[in-house]
Image (cartoon, rainbow, N blue to C red; front, side, top):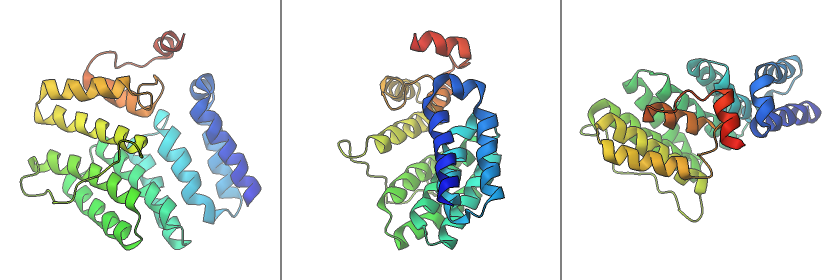
Length: 229
């Protein structure tokens, strides 16, 4: 089981960090990784594998809703095997995908609140903060937070959670976009693109921000080569 997991983890490492491999072999290697999971009995490792594949790299070649369904399976597997942390990690990725693929917002709000309930039950502070971050976006999209917002808000530490701060910036930019606050939206987008954790040309959040920004949105292989040259 652990040998299979190490092979899959190595594939995921290559896909995340190797620029050229990300574009030429990502789909084939990711599919091989998942086939290993299905071939061997590694059910206990599904949350880690699915969060790595469907949460970090599969956005390049699979629909958001398809990835969300796999991540929900990862969440369920995590709780079934006593790994609530990785299960909730999958849940966070699933919510992110569902926001971007246009899922029913009120159903999504209920799903987030369910995950929040479990996060509090298992005292997973990181999951709580990420879910609250996404919840505020969904609430904004529904009714600008008038009737669907809650008092609790995400509380990322600027000095202790740079990834959380980056995630918060992306969601703030998206909220400002849909509220029609152009200057505020541009402010957050510029901060996102100048962040070393977001601004790399082949990263998921970079592509999302450039899409919302409305320019330089077609992140092609040639533009990425120029960006890293």
